[in-house]
Length: 497
Image (cartoon, rainbow, N blue to C red):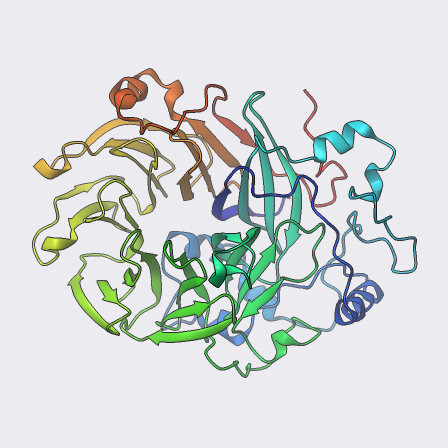
């Protein structure tokens, strides 16, 4: 019986930010010690042992809420508490698991050693400036991982380039296109992924490193998480400023690219400085788990937050107060600001209702409120390059395309719907570099990419609304790629044609 698989979150990487060939970082002394311990245990990855914070996510008096959290419960997390000292599983060592005493890769050879005799494999492994990259937060059985996909537009080919094992089950992602430490000076180009999980710490991974064993750095966490082992077997002592429970949502400030907001099951929202890796401020507005947080795309100090206390709040962090709030009829799943109208905020709920508010009239009725899906709306995403093009995805397994051109007249028109046969959908995002491409993932663990312009109805509805300077991709149809086994030796290869 195959392991339960799902994609919990995803994020696109803009063209030209990833290194053509990821570099291999030498192991530090602590990493070498940890790795030697893992080899002795015949266990090449850290076991995903839930901490007391993770267990609290599933307590009887406060069960896991939200579409994706319910799916995670199906992975039988409660069984992980049954520790008897035995090794639960072992897998073949991956490509990076050459024993520490073997020859190291030559400095002038940037490619993995297994590709040294194959020019074709080297070519496949090279990331081109024209390649579109998607990163998924994936769960398969006992594994949590980041999978980095390459989508080649000219051939419509989709394949896994590399995979990074995580310390816990991932819940949310935010791409950081700058090198930490350079951000206050304008930011040198980088390629990092910020990961929130069932742990109270936030991991920041360098995607330009081959086979990384550890994140580049952590934000918060427990005292144990800063040491050699990730196994937390007793109640953790948290670092100053840290969350104390799972990190459920992340948002990078668009004006100050070194400022990150995070929302947690501990009911708090925290503001982080990525340069100093310190918490700047904690907002304790909500009384329930914070499911969504989004910085305003223009007003740098304004953010929207939503929680399982069924409150939607607008906060000005400069004034350190909630400026506006409203009660919601159901738990909020996700929120998003509209890129072409700074005053529009869309809010989707577990009841399938989608509301769009004019924040200048926040206390009044929403501009539009309608039943978008039969089940929870897990994602709302707006095209950066096509005005009024809005897409929703849901646990009802359907993606729907909406025309928001008449939203001021309190109308939203359903243009198209599609069941991609990916199971319940937990995430969906437009590609910022292309106004027509979306990626989605869900309970079947497969990545789905759809070129909306290929549909005649969608193209005719929005064809005249593309922003100048943003060209649509002229090749590539919908694509899906089943997950490959973590034991597969072809993880870095293109699928055979």
